[in-house]
Length: 328
Image (tube, rainbow, N blue to C red; front, side, top):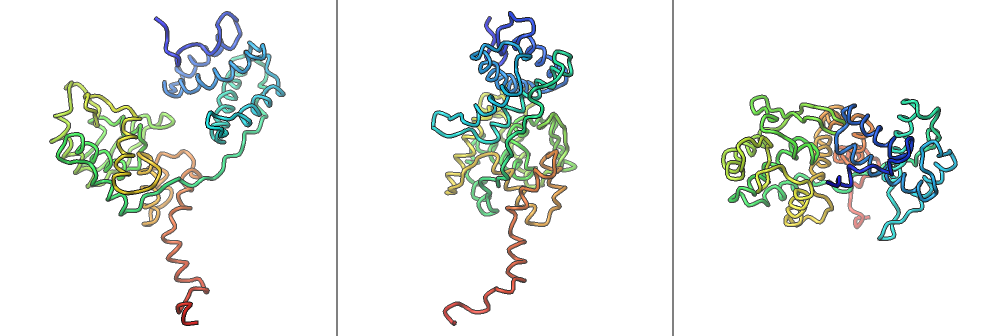
């Protein structure tokens, strides 16, 4: 039986120390090191792009790569254009080079190379981009009332959105919640193996708990097909949601609410962080809640939480208007 694309070697395995063989050893190392299957699949895809680029140039072994070739590879992605004519984002360019860098670091550490020709190549600087869209409190309330509570799926969707809004967890983290992930007595949820393979326990509000309880009593029994299924939020098939499915559903709810803003599931995370900061939450508490390893990632929300800054500006800036321009 043929392996799916995300399990196939990145290059032919007839070369003892070629990209194919060493790539498989690297992926085995990642698996033993407890990297998630999803992460390994992503690295496999990116390293196959690198191996394909090398093969076109008759480069079959990692040791054949020089610093100059590595720079050419980076320029390749800088000048690359997608089908729509647009360049790759800086994040995508960095991702392609970072995966190759990590592969070569492992080759050195494992003794296959004496040094990495890619180590001293500078990655393109990431721009400090603000979240694309933030929902106001009124807009969120408009979205939350869109599901049809007379149906099992509508009640489930309301409970999911309330959970996302209350906790700020990621889409995958929400879909991975189990029945025992929610501590309704202490008002906490446990996120198992979130981004970076890290567990964390975060608070969840009483309103979200109320909707989860309604879903568990009135909706989930109608959706469940297998009593052994322990995923909290399940699809019509009685299983865990596919991530693209929930993205489409929530995006539709936002449109039905008459809100012309780009976003779907992740917009709840951005909005939660921003609104909590505007209401006085400490940024380090937000960092712990969102599961950010670096505080600088969380600080981006301080640039969009402008309500307090606007109030201070109106109160203290000497150029504020005491009368209307018409009076002058």
